[in-house]
Image 1 (cartoon, rainbow, N blue to C red):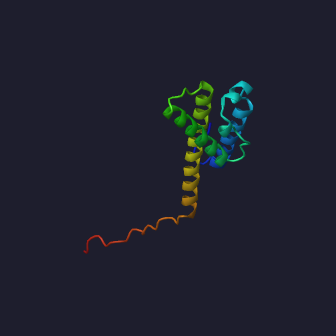
Image 2 (image 1 turned 90 degrees about the vertical axis):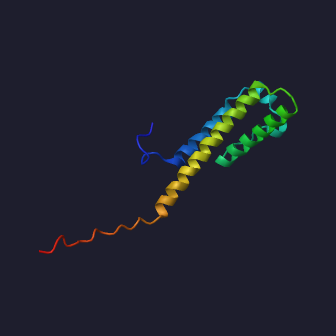
Length: 122
C-alpha cells in the first residue's frame, strides 16, 4: 500500500489495471467466454482505452438484453461489472494524472512579503 501521494504513481497504477484486465480474461473459463456474444468478445487488451471500450461494449449488451426482457447470464454480468470497475479506476487515475500535470505546470502563487509598518510614532 502507498504511504503518501508522493509515493503513488498513477501511471504505474494504470499499468496494473491493464494487467489485471489481461489476467481476468486469461483466467476466464472457455465455457464462460462461450456465453459472451460475438460482438462483445474480448480482443487483446493493450491499453486503458481497450479496457474502457470493452466495459462500454459489455454495458451496452447488458442494457440491450435488459430492455428486451432477456436474461443476463451471471458470467456476462460478472464480466461487465469487472470491466466497469476497471474503467472507473482508469478514470480516477486519469484525473489524478491530469491534476499532477496541472500542478506541475501551474506557477506558484505569489505572496507578498509582509510590509513593515511603523508602529506608533514617538
